[in-house]
Amino acid sequence: MPSFKRIPDAGNLTGKVALVRVDFNVPMENGLVTDDTRLRAAIDTVQSLRTAGAKVALLAHFGRPKGERVAEMSLAPIAGAFAKVLGANVSFIADCKGEHVKQAIADLPPAGVILLENTRFHKGEEKGDAELAKEIAALGDIYVNDAFSAAHRRHVSTAVLADLLPAYAGMTMEAELDALDKALGAPVRPVMAIVGGAKVSSKIDLLKNLVSKVDMLAIGGGMANTFLAADGVNVGKSLCEHDLAGTVREIQSAAKASGCEILLPRDVVVAKEFKANAENRTCGLNDIAADEMVLDAGAETIRYLTDALSRAKTVIWNGPLGAFELTPFDTATVKLAEAAATLAKSGTLVAVAGGGDTVAALNHAGVAGDFTFVSTAGGAFLEWMEGKELPGVTALLK
Ligand code: AMP
Image (cartoon, rainbow, N blue to C red; front, side, top):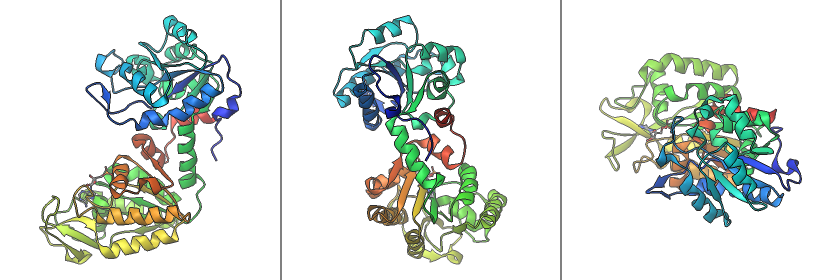
């Protein structure tokens, strides 16, 4: 288990100010929040700090204003939306540093909540600037980071503040770190990784890290074509990175050296057009015609991977196994997701998944809720799967 401090370790916080980094980078249309998942994710942390007696000053970014004040990227409309899900008043102040912000926090009632303006309106935020960090740290007594999704950045509000104030993981961060630790840090073996998606080139680091850590690596989606082609399979006009045969060899030999079995498709679903309900057929690997493209894994592959899954105790999943947005090329992704969800529900499998398209694919399969944990953090989740250090997490471990 990672040894970071959690909110209960902070003890009684009566009269103290907690600076809390949250992820409020929510989708908005015409000034209204269209999906409040991220707002709801902050509730537990905010309420537990209020219960401990603290005033809560929320730090967040919105969009990419690049150090300028951009009116459309103000967090002002989010304060009301958060107040609604929290069921308490949330005030707003149009900056995140300075005497007037300090005064606004002082003026809050006990256990009051205030949202500070977009941290990225200051150039120093993304640079991790020490001066800006000092000014923001002066507003609070403790720092709580609840934004795992921004933990791959060493920004003032995501990491540097932890050097200046007693630092704690918020409850959403805590849940994420605990789940990730169960999947790759100290997992119950055998561990199976399922990696799909379009291209090997965007996941080279991820594949190299995984083969050193997991017992089985199933490769699906467009990237499986690159692996098959490197093994001499004619993949027709499939999405395929033929120039990456050398990289595939490197990944294969690293896997062999660390005892990781790579599981590739054994049969495929092919079509001549990349569109929903395109005429298609299932065929063996040596039977793909020059004008056909592989859009999904076939039934034999689904059985092969489901069987591997039933031998695993832990699965970590990123990327769809086919062009899942187009029916019926979502079949392998949906079937395997259902199998993982059933095993997770019965308690025999720890099933962790993450990354943008993966969350969409699991939602499409209707099983995201049955997984042990589904991370909605895109970049941070992938960098963690790549084995990279996440500055926001490292800062909490000090
Ligand atoms: P990624 O962002 O790398 O996880 O890739 C996800 C995308 O890969 C999705 O939009 C899928 O439609 C696409 N994809 C998966 N398998 C295939 C395939 N066999 N051919 C073309 N696109 C695919």
